[in-house]
Each structure stands twice: as structure tokens, then as C-alpha cells.
Length: 307
Image (cartoon, rainbow, N blue to C red; front, side, top):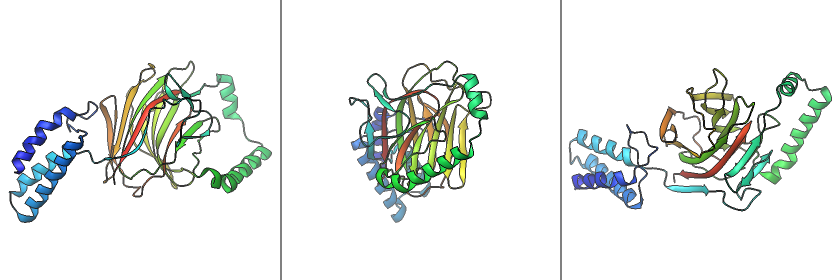
């Protein structure tokens, strides 16, 4: 019976294989019938292991085969193609800084032009006066004390000129994120950053961020996976080869995390890195996008999770 089920699985899987999957793993997102078949196979394997109905090594190989074709993220958490009439993004999306507007051609879009070189140098060399520093501190405390009850979570950009938008939705600890990103080259832009990821906490200060850098300077990675926590920000993995998406074409980014904390990131079908991190064991409270310089648009996004 197990052999027949395995043959059925082998016959069904190629029809649902995803083009972005790593060729060495042959990962497939199963349809409803395939999911039922996979669940039945797991039941048969567990019975075989418990009652010792087959050789342990044979059952181990069967379990490995099932793992290759299983898609554990079966709960649709969020799906949006940003086709609604703008300019503001639809619920649950909420702009928390700068501008993220609906563009009927490209989706959810944000543009931050680079500062002129002289102005950028002046801005970076300026020091805040005592009055400015005190005013900024009071404003932050006032927003945290009064605004927190009104807005719930709030994504705080690293720089005042950044733009940020968030979707406060519950995301399981294991997730699969797929989005289509469009980027346009801007004259004079170097090290433009677009980052996104799930967050935890009232201030969205903890979680993971996947950072794409447009026109990176020497030594700056094109893609970087960051971990944000109370201890600061650390790099989990990075891709330092050229990854230029500024062709105004949609590029598919897939980011998965399983129950063991194993994460994989692919762009247009090519897996760029895989890394495991178990720092976060609780569900996430939402999903954030931040533009720190550049012209970026999100055509669509889906987030799937586990029960």
C-alpha cells in the first residue's frame, strides 16, 4: 500500500512543482489532492515505524521523499494585489511614515529621491542642537504614550526621511512569503534600501528584515537577512553578488521559514541563501515594508502560515 501511494505521489508532484524551487530539493507546493496524499503517506509511515512493518532505512527514505514534496504552510494569512483604487493602500495596510501610495500600473509604490551630494554631505555632518534633540525626545515619548493606544503597532524607520507601511496581522512562526517587487533606477542613488519582513512587539522593533540594496557601493551586499531584537541588529546571511533589479520588471521573491527555524530566500527561481535561526519562537504580530531610498513598488504579496 505504501509503494502504491509513493508511486501516486511521484506521478502527481511534477504537475505542481514551482519554478522558483531549488533544483536539488525539488520542492513543490502541493494542491489539495496532493496535500491529502501527503498526509496519508505520513500516517502510513508512522504506522510502519510504530508497528515495524518495514525496514527502518526504507521508511526513513520514504519520509525524506515526502518531506521533499510537502508544503507545510497551508493557511492563507494575507493575499493582496493592490488593485484597489488609491491613493491609500487598503486595510489592513497602514502607512506609518512617509508615503506609500497605490499606483494603478505598479501596485503599492514608494519613491524617495536621493539628496544632492552637497545637501547629503551637509545633512550627514550636521549635529542636532540641544533644543532639537529635546524636542525629538519629547515627541517620541508623546507618540509612544498617547499614539500607541490609537495606532496599535508602529513601524519606526531608521531615518526620519524613510517611508514605512505595515499590515498588523497575526503571522505564524513558520511562514512562506511570496511577493513581486519592481524597482526603478534613480540618478545619483547609491545604497538605496528596501526592506521588509515580519515583526513582533508594539513598536515593531523585533523580527526579521530582508534588505535589498539598489546600486550597492563596493563591499555592500545586494541582499541581506537581518535579525532585529532588544540586543540590536545582526546579519544572519547575505548575498554579495550583483543583483540588479532596476529594470522596471516584476521580480518574484520567495522567503520561507519552517517550524525548525530553517529559512530560504530565492529571487526569480534562484535560491540565494539558506540559514537557520531559532531566536523567535512565538508568532509574529505583523508585516512591515520600509523604503530608505529608491523607487520601489509591490505588485502583489501572499503570506502563508501554519496552524
